[in-house]
Image 1 (cartoon, helix red, strand yellow):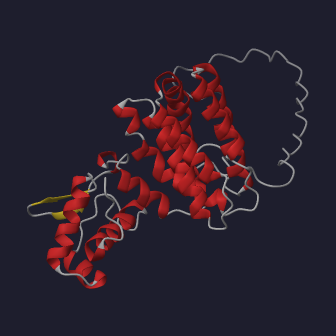
Image 2: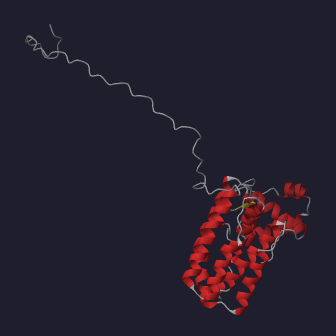
Image 3: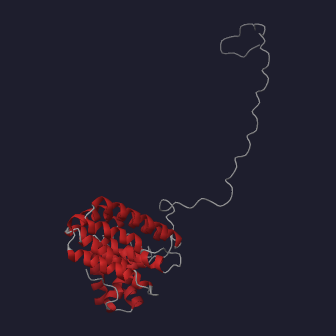
Length: 284
């Protein structure tokens, strides 16, 4: 699918609106002021409406008579759309939301890629192996530009999915690549990243040998290394989304509980019997 970003005014307008919605600047349920947006983005009303049609196709906005154009609930957004994923990742940094998104990516990869590589080991062709080898060779080439390492890594994982010869798995690249590219840019821009070639070589060797179990084990080891590299690059997986880190310093202490004393029990005396009182009247 061809991304809309960087395709002239139309693409820039789509991206600007999408990032405002995804980032919460235009909240769910909000009605858009098209005249104000037209002026702010410096586009024609026609271009703005065409851009909103793109977002409507992705489930992000809708239009109704008497209400106008509004942001739909997040549950309606197509969060697996390649453009939506890319906008979310490219709009992030190292915030809690960004870490949660990267953690979601890691969980998806852990589910998809170990199983996919088993199929690749059973079904790979000479052309698949050549594509994997080419990507791995590029991965090992020294290049100061992190974009080179990112492109090589994406090519390797794309070739692995293609080697399954399962059309649906091959299309998972649209889900995995935007996040993987974002993660790779962080890791390969850091001086603390490890050498990715040995872990990828182990996967390729197992696929070439047709050993599905070894391929799965090698892929799990690769994903474990990817997580460690990400942590060293300064984007740790620090628990559930929205859970704040534990406070620094010793844990708070509970004040000592004051001892509970039981007052001495007064001796029980049996009072002298009082004379009977008149019904309903005061005691004498």
